[in-house]
Amino acid sequence: MNTSDEIRPGNSRDSAELEKFQRMATEWWDPHGKFKPLHNFNPVRLAYIRDQACAHFGRDTASIRPLDGLRLLDVGCGGGLLCEPMARLGAIVTGIDALDQNIEIARLHAEEVGLDIDYRATTAEDLRAGGESFDIVLNMEVVEHVANPAAFLGDCGRLVAPGGLVFAATLNRTAKAFALAIVGGEYVMRWLPRGTHNWRKFVKPSELVDGLAGGDIEMLELTGVVFNPLTGKWSQNPRDLNVNYMGVGRKAA
Image (tube, rainbow, N blue to C red; front, side, top):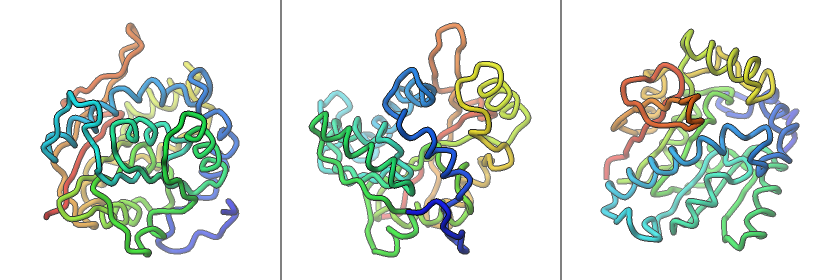
């Protein structure tokens, strides 16, 4: 895909956002590089996805492969940081990303570690047009980087099979999020390159819920995710959705 592609109505591609991530693409699997925050964030979101999916589909969280046989789509998969652990949990994983370079890196890394993952350089709206559906759809830290959030969320919802789940994570458009995620994360702590996020593109919980409702998704819960600077770890806090938050929704059977 050419990152200079024209943004047509309903298209989730945002050329400026794609160009930013293209410059960082080769660092996806460096735990100390520009994607270090995602590596640190991964344990809490992986546990959330596993536990919620197991509860919904009647699986045992203590099993080595609790998601065995479930079809899972990771939208905006980047270098595969979520796809690979989901595959290890037994899911049949498809990862899509608008950047060819991300997909190439993800494929190469999956081959190196011996995982069978279906990676495709495409978008949610293009995949939906092909009539595919999945038991679980992940939309994690992606919606704040697309051109049309409402249309994108609706497309993600339409990709969920009846009785399936969608998981979403993003940043709230609050003053606290601007102070911590942008000023703190990009300028003070320098966890991410300056300009990685645009506060105006952050998504309020009500906007996330409404967007997914456009794809026939009923939101089941939202929970905050907070960072403890003393331990250097992330954890859930259901009462604090002011900065990072995530949630799960379902499609009626």
